[in-house]
Amino acid sequence: MTERWALAPTEHGGADIAPLGEDGRPTAPVSHEPDLAEAVRARPDVTRWVWRDTHAVYPRLLEAGVRVERCYDIEAAETLLLAHEGHHGEPRSAAAALARLRGGPVPPDPPPRVAEPGRHSMDALFEPRPPVGVPLSDLVDVYADQQRRHGTTAHPDRMHLLTASESAGMLIAAEMRAAGLPWRADTHRALLTELLGERYAGGGEPRRLAELADEVSEAFGRRVRPDLPADVVKAFAQAGIKLTSTRRWEIENVDHPAVRPLIEYKKLYRIYTAHGWSWLQDWVHDGRFRPEYLPGGTVSGRWTTNGGGALQIPKVVRRAVIADPGWRLVVADAAQMEPRVLAAISRDPAFMEVCGQDGDLYKAISDRAFSGDRDQAKIAVLGAIYGQTSGDGLKNLALLRRRFPQAVAYVDEAARAGEEGRLVRTWLGRTCPPAANSTDPEEAGIPQDDPEQASAEGQFTYGYASSNSRARGRFTRNFVVQGSAADWALLLLAALRRELNGMAAELVFFQHDEVIVHCPQDEAARVTEAIRTASLLAGRLTFGETPVRFPFTTATVECYADAK
DNA sequence: CAATTCGGGGGG
DNA sequence: CCCACCCCCCGAATTG
Image 1 (cartoon, rainbow, N blue to C red):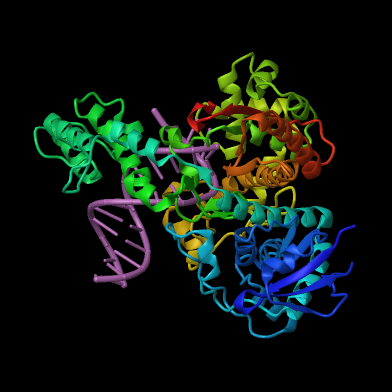
Image 2: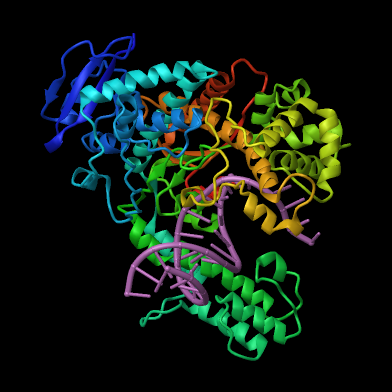
């Protein structure tokens, strides 16, 4: 028996709430509650809370020690439904949805919040919120209409699953921020000093960076600043070496004494600027790193974070991620997830069979189609998923196509749809935005279909398709795989969250195909088992009955850096 | 002077 | 020779 209630926070920390019937309509008058957290805490039988925006409600609940089992995030659902209906980019707030429903003027969305590193979840209590909330009586109308709109999609059951799991992602994002990733500032500082040397009292670069900059200058025989690409290119030119950039792959095979210190400088400079002392000061408090996760932050459904660079933590910095005393980190990584997802969505019999085992996928493929050459098999599979256009990989791709025609046809069709400007969807129905036009700055990064630009670069195009439409084909080709993998990862997270219920263990990190659970040492085995169970559940829930397996490699460690 | 773009690195 | 896909982050340079 699922019990659904709608909730809208009111001023001064209260909330309006109402029970909902099967049709999504209130079955009782709205109750005005003076205390949001108490209103929720007092109703443990509610299995799903329907609210406008998880971020506006849930941090306050967590602060008060209240968790909820499930929610339905109306604005997250609105975003997914709009995209599915081909209206990606229209205002997605509940107020906008209401205006579309009632026929009024549609208010624009408020601008996205910027990163606020120093703040804690507590601050959400006092944060001034833009006036995008709508009264509960209106909110339930939007909800009921959204339920109807689910029914108009090609696969209503999948769309319900998508909005439910996106909502679960919103809960998990808030819970992971509240829990925080265990982070030892002392270890991090020691690491910085070890790598970068001491900082000088007067500021400026730390000792090791200054030394490397001197070595580079010495090698060129004049003062060169290694952090200025133009300066470096000029210096190499004067040494008789022509470069088009100072990218690593371009300089690493150059024979010049400046190369070694230059590469070393770049590596350390990156750590200094992105994960150095000031990052530590901004982002780590009380032994925890608390990034703000944004589920569905990318078009493919992958998450992003708002500041902090949580999804780009350099490997070497992971040495600072250390479990509390007596606790462990269970680090789990979905092995070769994207090819397995391609097998599940394409239903290619031979590919599904290969993906029905837990072992090394590329090895299995190479045994069947590449006479044992694992590297060739891997290049071919990645080429199919990314849309490789040149190089030796094309030959391997042809071999792959002969062996697994249905799988390759699936991504080929997605590419063709993209080139022709059609909508492309993930398995659960997350929909790729249509080709953007160049006047819309919001859509930067999405390959455009702009005839003027295509003709301006005419000498670089061939055949009937513009460079842009081919770029878009690669984008949609990859979208169906990466996005369906994100669908699965969301279900996995939700399943794992339920499996961990009742344990002290906490989900503390998620990065596309990797999760970290922080738990007491004696729970580690149960957590490892929970991940296995969740993987099985997520595979079945997302893709239905399929022989494809989604194995995890798990490691129980005290330090994240020891996980692989 | 503030906002935007570029270049190069990090993650998957 | 690099590949190709999705991102974030920083400092410097450039632009408004």
